[in-house]
Length: 201
Image: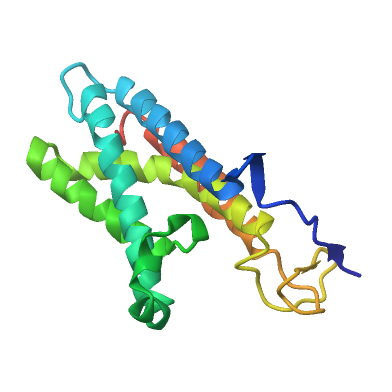
């Protein structure tokens, strides 16, 4: 027995020709909540420590740029290089989808290194904060992958297997849900517990 795919419309809000997808909302939620969580963690430190709240505020656009540019460039290079070689203008059409998790990681790490050096901030402290916030974005991203019916797992006979629209007629592991729970909620909880221990901070 398998579960039917819930067939949720990937478009969350549509007003005339304007369509806002769940994927876009996942990015917005990830950045905003991650930013606020980093500000909370910074507030646990001593006065005068860096990065401080101003450093976090100023780093936010760098992080957004790193994730979006890195994710897009990674997708172009790793997955669809032939297509974009023949249709280079498609690279800039982000609304058509196409982001790479690995590229996003490379992009945000690059932005972090450049920003920390430019602002003379301890790169490891800034990286710790970014790492604590990352599971928030991963959680929302993987939930959206499930809504889009993409990045599903292998064929399975477990009772919670899902028949995805583009995964053939056999049920598959909802690996997006697994990742949202483990790399999202579980990892966030573990890192939050560690971040709130003074001897570790």
